[in-house]
Image: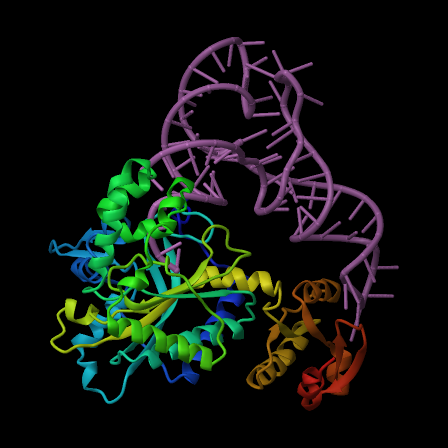
Length: 418
RNA sequence: GUGCCCAUAGCUCAGUCGGUAGAGCGCCGGAUUGUGAUUCCGGAUGUCACGGGUUCAAGUCCCGUUGGGCACCCCA
């Protein structure tokens, strides 16, 4: 038997209805904040991600699905979408369009990791980018929007964390400080952190190893090493969040795994359905990304991405069974003539916007059983008597009440709230 | 990439000391005429994940593979 490949999965009804709901809420929220959708290809030249995400990142060094095209070009299934959006921004000279570019996307990403709860090799992200401004006002609006989106999904109890990671100019000074303090004690660090000291010292900050904790706590804060502009930027972001009544905590240990982040970074975690992968959403500012991808004009930006799989898990837990498919009317014709007659009724009611299932002619008992199993709100019995009288037997499946209704009154009866 | 746990019917799971496969739910059919969700009766569930080994005999013990779960690394 051929099965879905490791780390991928089928999303079947009724689970799909939660996905649709989340996506509808997202689109609605994006529209309110004046974002427009962008769709970029699902694969790109490998160099885009290598340069955009960072040559030394885990994503690039060990998680990408990279393959050779027939002409030997190296292509990669996108592991994230920010680099692609910036590529499109540069390629189509979107800087020439008046105002900021506020773009959102929903779609699959691919990373070859070991699957576990909340982590898949093909997963979906809902994300957005605002390109063309380095104002902290934009940061605050973006963060407000993601909170609005989670609220609209009915997610409660999430925690917003923010931080500033400085700039490519200020960060090396902090990294130097980490080395100065940790190099002498490196033998006492966890094996992972000893490795990180070489590859990405910032990562040591959020190490979970118990033996690292005393050394981490002794480290200075990254905020002590921020340049003047970054410090001012961060203060204003905080001010704007407070103006909006958005609860947050500053987490100076929060470092993100992609090289392009500058200044503001943020993350939302939710305890509950998500196991160890409790991060629902992450994002940050990337003021130098466009130029590192070859833009001749500066294009500062900020963006985020929501792990849709994780958001769906959280929404499902908060509202179990709430987004099921609904069937307004099940039509049960009793014989061939009734079926042909009923098909016209079905067509009319479907055009009127109702969800209608037209059963083939057959035994009424079986039809009623099926109507019940399908969760139909109403059943419509169509037989010789009904056709002769011009009134059809409409049965409310919840109450069992059954009344004769003329064709033109059917919609009115079915649309009545029980 | 590393570690631990797991794999029996569509689903959730029993399966004793190694002796030839079971339950509940669901599914299908029936209980005379045109009425479901609630009754009663009946039926089919299956390469016991796959491959090898030990044994007279393997769902059961051993090895490998694949898949899944959880955690680490890392991230959404």
